[in-house]
Each structure stands twice: as structure tokens, then as C-alpha cells.
Image 1 (cartoon, rainbow, N blue to C red):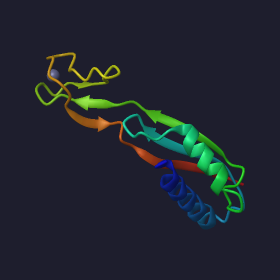
Image 2 (cartoon, rainbow, N blue to C red; image 1 turned 90 degrees about the horizontal axis):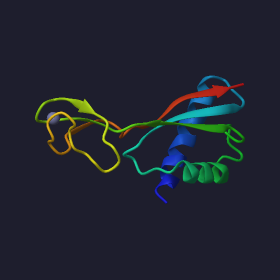
Image 3 (tube, protein in one colour; image 1 turned 30 degrees about the vertical axis):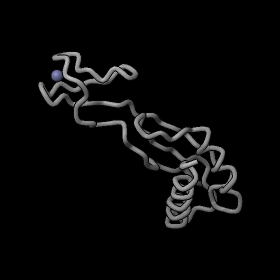
Length: 113
Ligand SMILES: [Zn+2]
């Protein structure tokens, strides 16, 4: 359900950029989504199809680029990608750490005609 406001944001950003570029139609929208966000591709797609008709983004293809979660260990500063729910540092065994990737959510680029 929280994909609705972010899809509205996407459409606003895309319409804004399309207008600045003097484009009449947007063909592709490239999104970057971190694993730690709980956004679901299918839900964004669903809301996009509901909201995009009548906007320059109508009929555009959404491309989702997923960013894997990365932590930096607070004990030994090793960077690692956790396996599922196992957030233990492979070097020293400390749990978790600072999130350095995985929370991304943005429009990376759009393609227009
Ligand atoms: Zn460590």
C-alpha cells in the first residue's frame, strides 16, 4: 500500500523531467530500489498502470534495478552482504553494522522520444 505515494512521486519526477527535456512521450523509466526498502516491484507496476494514463509516462516500461544490502561492521570495518536474515560479519562474527547500501530508492534515468 505504501507504494502508492512513491509511485505518485515517480510520476511527478518523470513528468517534470520529460517537460524540461521537451519530450512528448516517456518510453522507459529506470528505477533503483534497495533491498532494505520494502517496496514491491509488482505493486509499483500496478499503481503505475493505474496512475500513468493521461501523463507523459503513459505506456512507459518500468525497469527495476535492485541494490543488494551491504553492511560495514562496526567492530572490524569489513564490508559485507548479509545472507538473508543472517546479519553476522563474516570476518569477526559481530552482529549487523552500519548500512552502506540497500536503502536506495530513486529514478535513475528516463528515456524519452
Ligand atoms: Zn567484523
